[in-house]
Length: 199
Image (cartoon, rainbow, N blue to C red; front, side):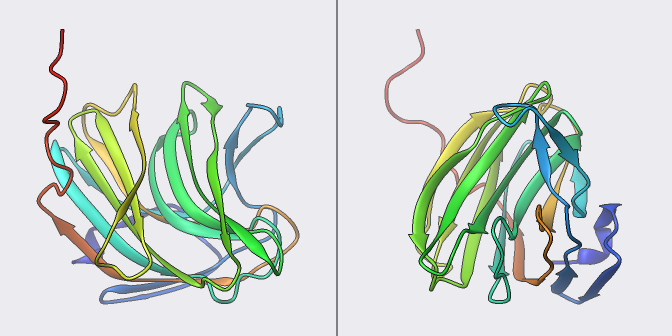
């Protein structure tokens, strides 16, 4: 995948990109979150994205977060349209025993958070982000071969030209190096629904 088409929405102070590998060193107190539950807003995480108007595709990337060691350290995939409309998916470090594999969808300035606990021994994760018009599917995989669905969502402003890619951040007073490799853009791997038909 040609990452020369990617652009920074917010550029980190320290990063390296070469061919199909991107390294981001996070800065303290960086995050993506809007309002819900915590009642605060943080919109300063570095985001590295490409733009497309393709209605059907899948984007896959491997993340390595072996250096994360502080609560909420995270890196993963993102579709950042503007500060009020975006989604992200990542593993967030919690402690030496477990971490959160989860996703956040933000529509109209309010974020949700869907998570499951996984072992803190897991240090890499693949994600696959798929688009079918203005609906989206996020999947994860520990081996890059077998993917499991994390969520399906609708984006209110996700029907036209979009931006998508990768991000990393450290919401508390910490910093770590996130590594992204094996990026691929393919035909949509999220197949058309073949179950109950629409009314």
